[in-house]
Each structure stands twice: as C-alpha cells, then as structure tokens.
Amino acid sequence: MKHLKAAILVLFALTALLLPALACPAAQPDGVKREKVLLDTDMVEMFDDGVAMIMLANAPNIDLVGVTCVTGNSWVQEGVAYAARHLEIEGRSVPLLQGMQYPLRPQRHELFEGERAMYGMGHDSWLGSLGRREPETWHEFYRRHYGMEPTFKPSSQHAVNFIIDTIRANPHEITIAAIGPCTNLACAIRMAPDIVPLVKRVVYMGGAFFQQGNVTPTSEFNWWIDPEAAQIAVRSAFKEQIVFGLDVCEKVVFRKGHYDRFMMTLGDSPEARILEKTFVGTMFAKDPKFTHFVWDAIVAAYLIDPSIVTSQRLCSIDVNTQYGLSYGQSLAYISHFPPGCQKAAIVMDIDQKKFWSMLCDPLYWASARKAQKP
Image (spheres, rainbow, N blue to C red):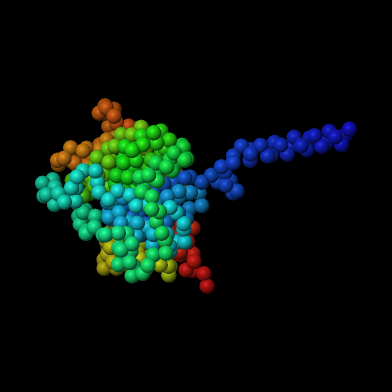
C-alpha cells in the first residue's frame, strides 16, 4: 500500500511538471517563443533595409515569415535583386516576393520634377526610385549589378496576395514591419479588409510628426512616396501601431566610429565588401566627418529587443493626401482629431548604446561568423 501511495505521489509530481510544457506548444525548445515578422520593404543594399532584413533573418527569437518588396528607395525589381543576394550570402531560405511597382497616385514618377519645383525640397536630396530608370526585371538587374546568375529564387506569388494569405493563415500572430512605402499593405487592406483585425501589430518606419520632413519641408521619404497608401494603412483599425519616424531616427546619428566598429564585426565577409561600395561606405572613405542615419535598422532592433525604446508618445495619427505644399505630411493629434484616425505609439527615443551593440553583434551576421572560421 505504501508503494502504491508513493507511486501516486510521483505521478502527481510528474503531471505538475508536464502541464506547463503541454500548455505552451508554440514555445521553442529553449523556451523562447519566436515573433512572426513579415518584412515589407523598399530594399537597398546593406544600410538600411538590408541590415534590417539580415538582423531579423538571423535573430534566434524572430521567425521571418516573408520579405515583400515595394518601390520606394529602389524600384521593386532592384529590391528583389538586393534581397535575393543578401539571403544568398547569409544562407537563409525566406519567402521573397515582388510587390507593387508604382504608388497609388497615377504618374507619381512622371510628375515628380514639377512637384518638387512647386512644393520645395527638404534637407535630404535623396530621390530613390524617382531618380533612376526602372529595370526590366529583377533577374536582369541582378545579372547586371552583380555580374553573375542568382542562386536564390523569389516566389512567383504577388507580394500583396502573400500578405493576405499569411495573415489569414496565422491570425493574431503576424507583426508587419512596414519599413518602406505602404503600397503593398494598403492594397492588401483594400483587397481583403478582413485581415485588419487578424494582424497582431504594425511597426512602421515612416513619418515626421514633431519636426520637419527630410525630402520636403513637411514630409518624410517613405510616406511621401505614397501618401495615399500610408493614410489607408494608418487609418486601419489595427490592434496596435508603432511608428519609428524621423522624430527618433534623426537622433540616432551614424558616425565614422560606428561604421568602423560595424566593419570590424563584418570582417572579411561579402556583406562588408558590399557595404564598402555603397554610398555610405564611399562617403566615410572620403570624409571621416560624414554622418548618416540608419532608419530601418532601428525597427529591426526593436522587434528583436523592445527594451531599446525609452520614450514614446501615444497620439491619433494621419497622413495628408491633399496635393500641395504639405503633401505626404504625417500628423499627430493629442486630443481632437479628424474622423477615422487611429491611435499609434510614436517612438521618441531609444537606448542608443544598446542599439549599436546589437548592430555589431556577430549573432546577427552569419556571413561574418562564417568568414572568421579558419
């Protein structure tokens, strides 16, 4: 009888130990639940979209479920080529999809010069896709730019359809990192409004709420490229919206010391050689006093470690779509606001020491770790 009682006690003890594990089937073996992130990006090489993608692809607590490209900093065809090359180098198999080629406003690229003449230029003369010829295909651009054939093959599915399907297949689990113009996201909302309540949250890089813009006196680049799409996105009733605008991004200044430290992390890797040839790399080589910003990399760092945010303001937000001097301006309202506006957390400050340490952590750079092996 004593043996039976002892066996029953052991059984109860084992059950108590097993129940927590059975209750958490989504947890990883190491106890870390991975955040499902869909990266929607106007991809460029390395800084800043490229860095964001690589960090997310290699972060052990992130499940990068897909990368959808859109026209903005680059033409969407260029962005797919850049993303494919980085994923090849990092040895990561992530769904990569081509999205919208043009902003929602008709003839945005064709009418740009007249718009700039009428409405002015900001402190940043960057034009992105507005200043370059559109490539025929991502494949053609890849071969011309890299001088070889790609080994990574993007999906044939359109990015907008992928966004819809992925959210429906993972209700309340997908974080959308919208670090480019919102054209893909806006089209997905228009095509399938049922996805809005199914999204876990949207984290944007866009806007300039409490300061001037960069590419125009009033507007930040990402939301200025397609203000109509940005307005559709931020006015959608997502459960949570977090915005990294110029209010925080222009406080995080990329200096020569940061660049040198980052290059030491990358070592003799293909990513280091790419970075050296970018505008940022060539400018630091010419002028050690040159400074730049890292924009989208901050969003990636936040998704990996939310504790980097030290200050934010909760406001109702909107985007001006009236074609005029303030076209593309982002707006924040403390109390009274136009009908249709939604709440968003506008990030104001981050722990910069922690951020730069994350950026230079070899954990997020598989190509650098591989290059260091004897």
